[in-house]
Amino acid sequence: MLKQIERFQPLFKSLGVVVTAPEMAQTLTEAQLIALVPEHDAWIIGDDPATRLVFEAGHAGRLRSAVKWGIGVDNVDREACNKLEIPFANTPGLFGAEVADLAICYLLGLARQVVLIDREVRAGNWYKPAGISVQNKQLGIVGLGDIGQQVAKRARAHDLEIMAWDPMVKSFPSYVNLQRHWPDGLGECDFVVFACALTDQNKHMFDETTLEHLKVGVSIINVSRGPLIKETALIEGLQSGIISAAALDVFEQEPLPAASQLLEYPRCIFGSHNASNTIEAVERASYQAIDLVLEQLKETRS
Image (cartoon, rainbow, N blue to C red; front, side):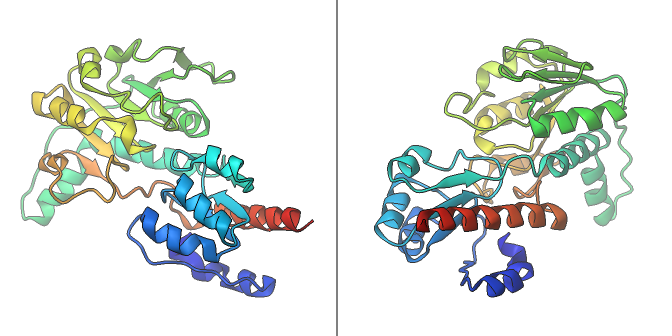
């Protein structure tokens, strides 16, 4: 939303709302938020650390509304928000198609080494590696919510066989082979896409023990949250050759440090936590977030 904030200024002006849109690479620090949030009636939260200390500072100031832009709330201390009686909401179900598009883009890019070929041609090399066909390959999807089901829908169009892990989903497509327990069946997969929410329970669900279950040559894709994957374990898998390559839009530390060992693997593809960032998706989520803020502020006045 911040990068497209000018698109919404006419609406803010018509509402008589003054908006602060700080410059940042990915997030503000807790200290910066403690200084900034109390000066505002509402906070549209990105991936920033929405901690107890920030909410307490906001509550002591003007804060009367908090809305998480997007579905993921792993960075939000909702318990503190509730305790302080600060209204909170998020904007689920708005980015599934966009994030799934990128997941499939990554899958095909890894299968055909598209990024590596581009890099070599730009360097003056006529590089022609043999890729792999995706038809009849096995795709595993971790999480079968909106994003996961959108990934499955697109994968089916590419004639992939589809397995998924989700302990709670009740409704899912008949063509998905659902597993309730991770990592049952993982060794059958040629590609694995992480598309689930991050919780305290599934942090580092991909770790060193996961490597024992992988099919040699598997490709790993993460379009969800970085801490689902323990990066030292991923690097170990890349070093050993068990993992052919990875495509990551998210990382344990963002932005990805320039010294990250992941950058040593040229077949990997890296993003900038940008899977949902299309003009249309940002507009949908932003208007919904603004509507929720206005509703919360109206309720707190009554």
